[in-house]
Image (cartoon, rainbow over all chains, first blue to last red; front, side, top):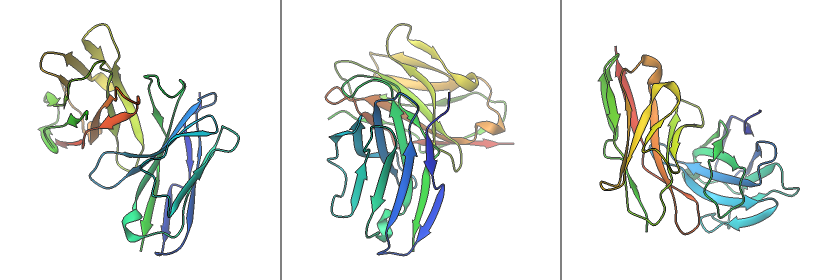
Length: 116
Length: 113
């Protein structure tokens, strides 16, 4: 079974530029998560999708971050414009159960973003 | 609010020695616990999980963890570490309210040759 795919693996941009990350979850997984992991910290949930609907985006900085999962499969996270403090690893995860149930999350390799 | 505490930010240990990484969680109605490992420049990989049943859980790469309800702990152990175990280890619990993961701050395991 193929794992969670993410691209790109690394991205370097200047502040005020825009950037987009892509995630393809494990086939058949209904729930998809985007996390931000700052160096030395645990992951912080940005947004959770169930199929193509948003379950929780309470910690997403909506003035600059946006995410979509239009067909309920792959997802894109965008930052526009980027700030220095957005430098982090962006992790995508998926799980098979619907939101509201305890289940294992499977993670992709992450995208390391550096904002100069 | 629920929380997870990983008591050590770094644990140095000699190769082939045993190791214990500590994790405590705040009490909750239902307890689902996880340990993930993050190798350098990689994503998070599930090591093991406790959902129910036996309190001793065996995971990949020779790791095991014991769920202790009275002490609200879920410590991770390995009897003999290898240089390839160098990584950061994260403990997490599923929230009662929304079933999202609540993460500890992580423990870096440093293997000394």
